[in-house]
Image: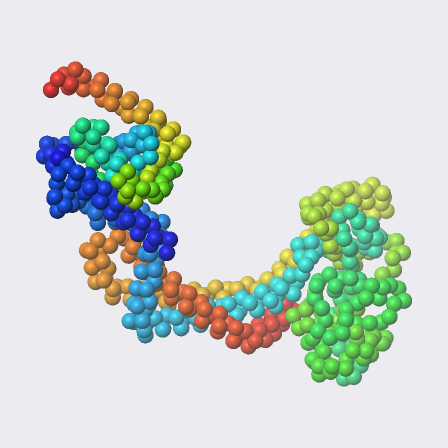
Length: 424
Length: 118
């Protein structure tokens, strides 16, 4: 802004110099001072016009206009305080509520799985073309083969769904359990809120009976007992010691209990497919490259074991992004939530639009006067746009504040809702 | 007292002022008033150059990088802004001059000898 001011001053200075030089030249020709000044002015033409043209060619013009519009807009809003306050309030509540909902969605449903290896965590699937089926599960020998693919996978983990009967203090319960290889939980990037997760080796045959429990189970059955760590719980007539409690949003495959998966790595049956195999892609390896490598593996299996394993004919192996699978399993709940957010915003906007429309038609006179005085269409549109932006910025700031205050409240409601939804 | 001459003078065609300014500066740097004088004197007072129109044109040329400007002192010890032709300006002058010659040549051919007579 100051840059432009100085430039205009310099320009005026230059014109003054011009007039001075011209006057002096005319004086030399014998004119009186008064005559010379008049003549110089005359041959210069319209001074104002020249300055105006200079000003308008400046790069800071838009800034001046914007500043004018902003000040005028503020005055207009202050003049109609009631209307402005109403708009701001509606927008702020709408923005606040949808921001809070969106934040919950993002942090509760996406973020916990938004770990460092996101995009690299894949499940390995098999397609048996002859039977037109695809399997999310693989057998132990197949898992062993995949574990050797160090060129594409950083780590390969395996898990299995099982049922356990919980029979310690209180009534017996039958619960879904996910048995996982030791690094699986760590790969999700979620840490327990209490205790620790599995250590490498705890999934070895003959390893200790340890269990991680979910927040809901902790609350329901153990009344959030902080001394739960080390506590022995009885499942399937065996004692397991609790090593950690996972956070409420962590509903890994919809279960509340996680135990180490003990595999008999010497199992030979290639058709006994009961294990979900996931892998962490090596850094820099794309899913496409991994799939290409897996195609070679599939071909190799078919060559080697096709005789004993008939479903290997035209076998296909490929990867799926685990995150996509996780979120798609909660798709309905998420869609409902996102639709709610969208509707909230639409309703808010249409309300405010109505108010603003009424306000604009009340300002027809003003527009007519400005047009008559030579205001360009673009300036008048700009004026209204600036006012809207002003309104939006104020409401946005207030909305964020509301979101911040209401976040803890909404978080609980939504997580309960989504948790029950995704369990079904 | 030539400036008070009431004889009807030719108004500049659109776009020719830039060309005249560039041409004037070929003899060395000059301030605005000097450029205005030079154009009028060289055209033997045939052209009407509104001095005020000169400055927006100078600014335009400066922005395009065809001329450069700096403050200096005139021959009669007055502070003034002096304009000088840049290399790009020189190229532009050649280009514009050729264009102008072709244009006037073509128009002269169309108007023909009768046009010249009347």
